[in-house]
Image 1 (cartoon, one colour):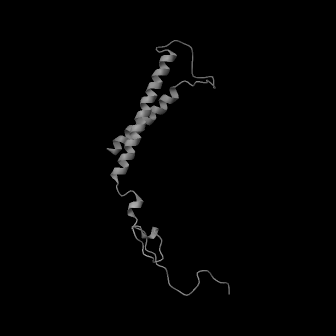
Image 2: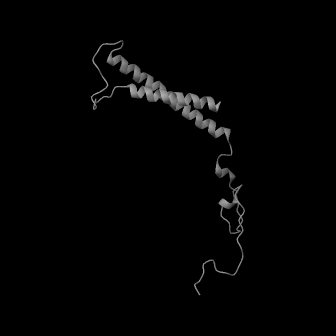
Image 3: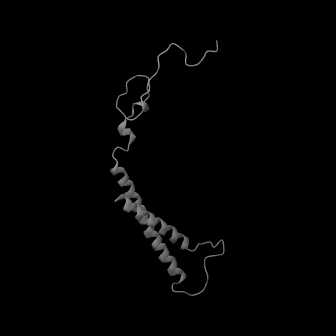
Length: 120
């Protein structure tokens, strides 16, 4: 299901980019994008059709993005790291990250030597 939704999402993304690039710019700063010759659709009709298609594709993009987020959350219920933190950590000199499942066991060697050489 998630793979199908990702493929649909990517198709919507490609179509949305294409439709946005087809639209005529308002300012015409580069001097391109609009010849006067007649055609099947008038400039106003083409603009409203492209605007409508852009809105529909944007809504589809929004819906598929939300659906992918919801699917990602419910497919892996243990994804939240805060659910894996134990409620109490013993005072054995280790931090809370060492108490997480899968963390390597570290031991603190006991010695009378200082951790930093004193230079004597």
